[in-house]
Amino acid sequence: MSASLIELRNVSKTYSTAAGDFVALTNINLNVDAAEFLGIVGKSGAGKSTLLNMINGVDQLSDGEVIVNSDPSGKKISVHAMGEDERALWRGKNMGVVYQSFQLLPMLTLVENIMLPMDLSDNFHPRRSKERAMELLKLVELEEHANKLPAFISGGQQQRVAIARALANDPPILVADEPTGSLDSITADHIFDVFEHLVSEQGKTIIMVTHDMGLSNRFSRALTITDGELLDAELDLNLDKTFRRRK
Image (tube, rainbow, N blue to C red; front, side):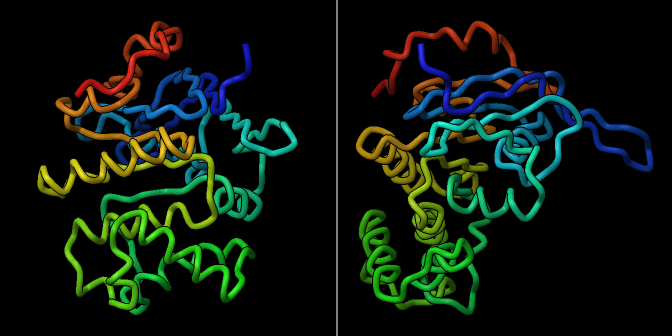
């Protein structure tokens, strides 16, 4: 059996605060396979965003290890063993991040926002990068708005641009933090359609966190997180991969 794409081994995170230590995650063990659409479902404060930040290396863990097997040479990458600059460069090329708040730069057009990660990852070529950005805008059905500023499109459209930006460097992995939390149901459904296309047609691996328990059946696998602990995680690792979206 081949190794999982992402492996979390006894991952814990404790924050030091003026009121004392706050335990955000406790001994998280989790394997994520390639081309999986994994949902992490939990209430506000359950540890969902912290878990994503452990996977993408934005925040340092307190204990444990995060291993990613996305290197073309087959080499396993220990995310938190890298220095901060090395980790940022690695993340830019291997992992797209989608935020609930979009985080588009307001002074850049939509196509320029999508081209920016290519520049930051030293992967920028003026003509090819623009062509790539336009392809991604077409994927999310916004190519006709390419030269608009973010302020002149809707929130749902901005979220689709944020997804396109996360795909700029063609990363094998996307992590999404409550990407539908502030959207209406129709727009949220469209976002799910985009994600499902990326998994089924492009083989992307997507990890998404949400507080909405009703979305569980939209994922290929869903786990619940409560008070920093994954419920029944050890059982879920052996779930049949034929469990897919129920329409």
